[in-house]
Every structure is written in structure tokens, then in C-alpha cells.
Length: 111
Length: 114
Image 1: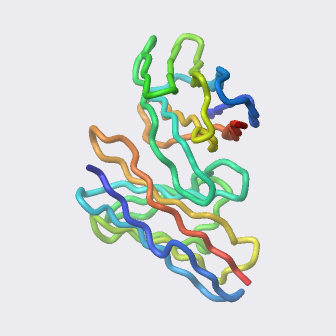
Image 2: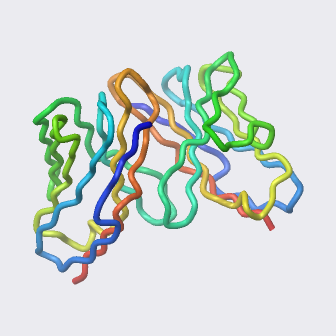
Image 3: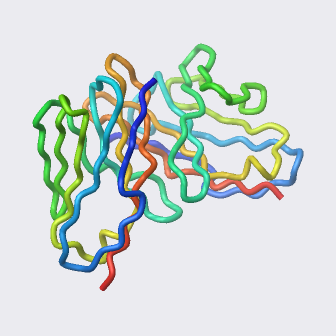
């Protein structure tokens, strides 16, 4: 059974600081996704990572994938208040199409 | 793009009644759609996989007779919560896969059973 572990579950940080969210998964995967969710809203797609060593960046967020370690990271650079949200990683089992989500990381960026 | 429209966005119903939630793919055909449930401050849990023209596949622990899924066309899947109870109150989200676009999510439905 594919399990996805995300940590930390809650992250409170000051504006301007850097931090990393980690996502571990238990079995071989085809694809890994990062999503953002604002309160009361659905999911917004941030990144899809398809291969070992993949790195993608958008603004202050950068995601990477190490398929050998079954680990993905979401790095936040110089956080701003607008990044406050819940971030989920989600993994698709190899040869499958079901997304399995991590528990989510609630990020609060304090001014 | 790949747009999935979900309705209603919010519904309040009385205990014992049924509620239907619609999920439409607006600009593509979706042979497979997914239904998730999310309780407050929790993650998304897959309830079922909806397949056009065939029976839905339910995840373990999800009552198929309570959560009826119909995927009668390539652009529409519906989830009906039958005989709703307060513990069914949750945020329900649908999703569809579109090649090259990955997974697209509906805007979600906030169900409150009173």
C-alpha cells in the first residue's frame, strides 16, 4: 500500500526566512505533485515531478524529487505572507492513476 | 486548459435527505473521475474512482450504497449522498485526469447536514 508522509504538519515562519517541507513515500511512483490549498478552497496545482533529480521552480517555491530516496522537497525562499496556505504532496503509484495525498503542511508566514 | 466544474459549491440539507453533487469536465472528455472527501484540517481521502459507462470503484471503508456515483457521460460524474447524516458533513472534491495537464480539481462542495 502506498503511504505518503509529509512533515512538518505545521510551520510558522517569519517573512524573509527560508524553510523546507518534506514528502516521503513508501513505494515506487510514476509522478509526484505539489498542491496549494487556501482555506475553504479547492486545490491549486504547483508542480509535477516526473523523474529522478527533477527540479522545478516558480517564484519563491522550488520542488525537487529524489526517486531513489523516495523523497520530495518543497523549498520556500524568503517567505512572504501571501504564501500562507496548506501545502500537499501527492503521489501516483507506479502504473496506476490514483493520487495518494500526504497529510498536508499548514504554513503561516508572519509579518 | 483543463477545467472541471463542480456544483453546488455549498449545500445545507436536513438529516435523512439526499444530496447530489455534479462534476463536469468543460473542455475535455474525462473517462475517469475521482471523488475525495476532506474533513476540516485533514487531508483529502479518495472515496471512489468513477469510470464512464461502468460501475465506480470504491475505496475500502466507503459505503457504496450511501455514496452513489454515476458517470453516464464522458463529461459528467455525479455523487449522491443518500440519507445524509451530520457525520457526512464534509468538503467533497472531484478530480479528472487530462493528458498533458495532469489532475484537475473541481472547486469543491461544502456539505452541511443539519
